[in-house]
Length: 245
Image (cartoon, rainbow, N blue to C red; front, side, top):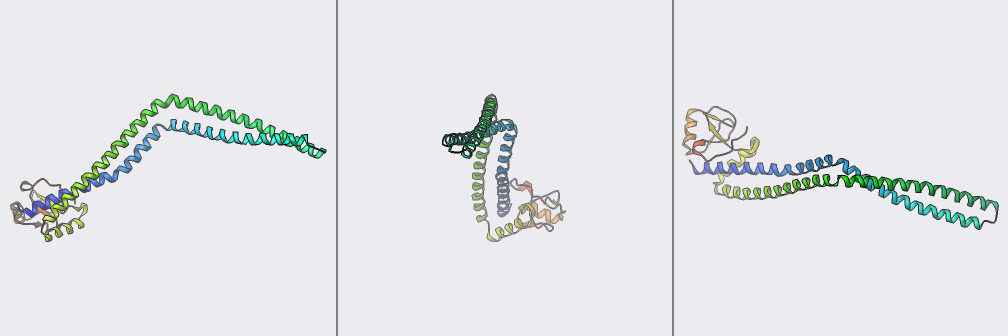
């Protein structure tokens, strides 16, 4: 077979491999998101308990701050009551103190409710921790494997690109330009197609017997009259990826 044709087939195989590897690499973020979503769905009850616990802790802290401020108001009202010099000041101090003590009582009840909510959530979390940790370990292992796959694909792409550059540079410039033009024009980027059973496997156009004979000999580069791909005969060529229409 003509050496240039062999190089073109090798070049297409490399390009096909690069496209496949790039597609796999580009799909990894979506797969990563799917793994995270699956974990969240399977651990949703546990995560809800964690949210409830954290919310109870935050709410309790806010209520305790408000309680301290309200008690300060009650103390202020008590001092104002002791220092009252007339009925108006006395009545205002009584009203302020009663309101503050009532509000303090309400806050104390709410704080107890939040403490109970926190304890209940914490207890439920402890009961489910082992199962969720197993799920989390599975998720982390899947994500780690995915990251390793991403690194491997990136390394493979780089190696294939370097080999592709070497093979392309070894082609005559005119032949390399022809390959690039066809590759840029056709769907899938496959510029080379197998001739099989007297037809082009890319466009399925029947080839004339004379053309098929030329392809079998492999002494020159033959272009399909219909799809303008470079044709080769598989029995005389290294294994190549079948072109898609």
